[in-house]
Image (tube, rainbow over all chains, first blue to last red; front, side, top):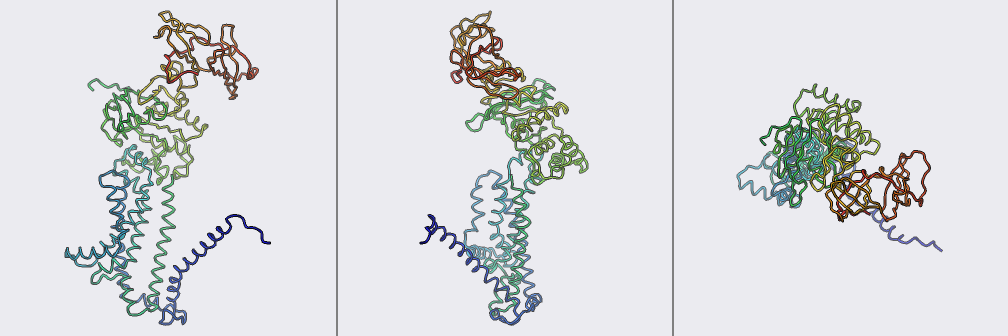
Length: 274
Length: 364
C-alpha cells in the first residue's frame, strides 16, 4: 500500500521537476559552446576540435597580429563615437519625452524605439542605399551613423526608464529654491540620471563592438572592425587564434557587464528609491 | 493697483481665481497676510488651500486676479524668481546630494563663494540641530530629520515668506507636537512670515496667529484661533474646528432685546440675531462648556457612553427629547459616573451659538 499523494502532487512535481531540468538544459546549451571556445584557446595544436596540450601561444599570436590590432583600434573608435552620440541623443530625447509636453511626443517615442523591431539588415541596406545615393564614401562616418541607429533605441529606453521614475516634485523644489530651468537640469535632473546615462553608454558601446550586420554594409576600405576581421579569418579555416581572440572578447564583455551591474545598477536602484 | 501698498503686508491676493478646466480650485480670493505673521490656511482636502499656496509660490499662475509679494505684483513672475521658499509635504530633498549640499543648494544657485555656501549652510543646519549629519544622504535620515533638513534648506536664503505645505503630515504624533512648538518658536525668533497649510484644526489652533478656514475654494472665516473656536460664524466652522454639539431649536420670539429659543424642552434668551419667530435653528455648544449637575431647570439626560481619555472624561448623554450631547470634563479624581446614570446638564446660554438650520447639516 502506498500512501496517497496530496492533491495536486502530480502537477507540482511535473511543473517544478520539468521546469528545473528545462532551465538547466537551456543554460547548458547556451554556455557550453562558449566554454568550449574558451577552452580551445589554450590548445597547443592547430586544431579547434582535437585537444593536444596546454599552451598560451595563440594569445601571443593574437597580440602580435597587426591586422587584429588595427581592427581592434577601428572597433574601439567606432564603439566610442557611436556610443557617445547615441547616448547623448537618447538621453536628451528620453528627458524630453518623459518630462515635457509637446505635440508629437508619442510619435517621437515610437520612432526612437522603431529600430528595435525592424530587422537590422533592412536598416543596414536602407542606410547603404541612402549613403550611396547621397554620394557619401563608406568609412568611419557611415559606420558610426549605422551603429548610432542600432544603439539609440536601447540608450533611449534605459534613460527613459530612469527619467520616468524621477520625482517631478524635485524639479518644483529646485525652482522654488531659485534655480532656473538650466540650473535645475544641470544640478538636479542630470546627476540623478547619470547612472542610467553611463549604463546606456556602456551598453551602446558593447552593441557597437559586437556588431556585424550593420558593419558589413557600412564599412569602407580600411575600416574593418574586429567582428568583420574575425569573419574573414574564419574563411581561411578555424584556428585557435580565433578562439583566443574570442576568449579575450568574452572576458572584455563580461568585465563591462560586471562593471555596469556592480557599480551602476545599485546606484540606479538607490537613486530611484522613494 | 494705484493704491500705495502697505509695507506691513507680506502677501496679498486680489480677486485671485484658479480654474483647472471646469473645476474651480480657488474662487475669487481676497487675502492680506501681514509681515511676520504665522498664517494658516486650514480646510479639508480639496478646499483649495494647497492651490492657494502654489499660487503664492508660483507653481500655478492665477486664472484671474493678482498675487502680490511685499507690494510687488508677481502674478506673472515664475517660481524661481519669487522671494519665497517652500517646505514640501514630502520634503523633496535631492536624493543625490548630501544634507549639507541640499541646504547649500539655494546658495549655489545664487553663485555665492564656496566658503560662504558652506558657512551659511552649516549655520542653518545648526539652527535645526542637524550639524552632525551634514555629510549623510537624505535617505539615511529619519522622517523628523528630513523634515528639519528641508526646513534648513528653505530658510538658508532668508526668504521674506516661508510656505509650508502640510510639513508635519508624515510625522508621528509625538514628533508632530514637538515640531509644532519648535516651528512656532523659530518663526517668532526669525520674524519671517510663515504661510502654513494644514487640514489638522488642532495644529492650526496651536501654531497660528491667524487662520483662514477654507471650503470650496473660498475663505469661510478668517480669524484668530480663539475667534474661530469661540465665535464660529457658520455651522461649517463650528463643526470643522474642535468637537461641537449641535442641537435643534425653534425661535419663539426675536427682537432687539434678544432671541428667545426653545430647545431641549427649555426656553432661553440669546443675544439678538437675524432670525424670525417660528424659524428652525441649530444651536452649537462645545462639550467642555457643558457641566454635570444643575438645578431643576437644567435639562435631564441619561449617560450612554463614557470614554476615559486620561486628562479628560468624554461623556455622551441622551437627553429627554432624544438629542445627544457630548460633555467633556477634566479628570479631577472625583467619582466616575456609570453608564445609565441620569444627570442634569447645565450650561450658560451665552456659550450657545445660534445658526439657521442647514438642511445638509441636521443635528442628530
